[in-house]
Amino acid sequence: MFRFAFVVGFACALFASSVDANPLDKWRISCGVDKGSITKKGRTWTFKTSSNHCPGGIFTQRAEIYTDKVSATHRGAYLFTSRVSMTGEKGQKFGLFQIHDGRHGCAPPLKIDVTKSGHLALISDIKTGPGESCIRGKLSTAKSPGRFVLDGKEREVKVLVVFDGEGNFDTTIWLDNKVQATGRYEFSKSAGAFQPEKYFFKHGVYSQYPFRYEMVSRDVRVKRVKISN
Image 1 (cartoon, helix red, strand yellow):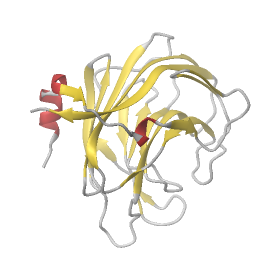
Image 2 (cartoon, helix red, strand yellow):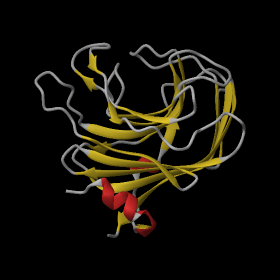
Image 3 (cartoon, one colour):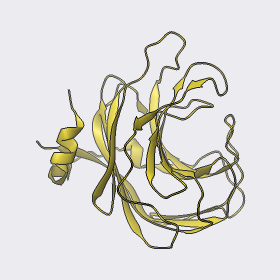
């Protein structure tokens, strides 16, 4: 089975495959936002503070875009890339990218959080019931070597996701071509645990409490890739 020693060791061997239809590169606004909170020009998206228009959960600020869905048993590797710059109130914690399965409440299979210190955290909950009935967890406990700082500097963000065809996936995250974290999600087979049927990507700013910011995500794209090892 694919493991992340291969992803990190052979990251330079990624190359785009000739796939015509790529649902994970078709983006739209998630649940709606306050007027003017998300604007788009070509492949560049600008995000600003918005109330949360999505049902469920305890987070009150959301300005996100999301992709079409793939089956949870889909097999393939996808690389999300964007050049992201952000200004705003420092010392805030927020989500930057998600791999979601449509659940209401609890963190999804993967939520890449920017912590108050700017380091990246890979959050992943097991949903065991309605609302916030969850087993809280992380895909990695390691502290990212780099930081995502709200200083207006543009940084290249990359997220590689490898679906194994059995409902699980591996992921690697880069900032400016430096690996920040790796992890593996395996869905819970425990009785009563939420069972994913579909996966899709989300990108933007998602936080428990509102704060003022502006984030520009330039040349947002997802490519289906092959991994040569």
